[in-house]
Image: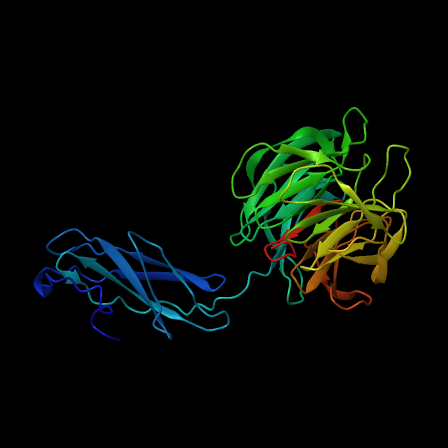
Length: 400
């Protein structure tokens, strides 16, 4: 370990008698091609105030600086294990390096969340999984209120749930969010434009959309609302669906959001798929049709393919479409069991994962598919509690 930072951090007034002491290293936390390095500033700052702190990676010698803890180090290689040392600098020069941090390995985000749902009583549970592995879900925290028939969307950092109904048939317009990388309870985000249940939610990296639903006045909704995921606040009207829909499934890419199935205002199950361009407000356009009409289905996606599964009437059907082109859906395969309604979905760009649902009693089964390859679902593990009509999201779905 060198005794001073790289060239460029050495002052022309370098004086080791007035240099600061070394910072005390804290935890290094890996991100996607990045790491956050925490530290504690030294008590002895030397002959003048500390002007900056630096961090150095081992291996690769990548540096970064900040005015205070933590230091964000970018340009790292996913899958490579790094340690970090930190130094301080003042007018007279740099401190010695701190001790080395713990090892941190950057990786592409890969966390899926399942929130809320119904299982007598309604749940406020949020579970999480690592999508690229198999195994049982782990408790993440709680929603603000126990809710079902909700919609969800996410960016690479935030998971967002909107609308729903609580025990006693109280409809909600609340929007709430969590920081996906850290477990904990949800926080208030704002409100939808109306109190509704059974909305479909999807997003790209910046904008979340919630479409359709059913109001307290027993009216079917064709409204599409949108939010900017990185900032809190009330939703804004985006446009309308082609026709009012309750309980559509939703999935999309970085450019398009698709809403499929649902119940229309005649009370009949629908097979229609419609789409919007996420970056541009406006009304939806017809895309095609599912292989069978159904509602309370869910959607997942890669960057190119949207997959819609399950639904009511009882179905274990999985359909798919190519997002960039319009047309009717094609049969993908089947779920492990017939799930009549309310299955929850999450995905990374390779796997789609489906959880819960109801076939009589609510279920806790989690199952997955490889989105690029048609075929039947495979067992993944179990939720922490059986439930249906919640909603799933992830930090690595096809819209990111």
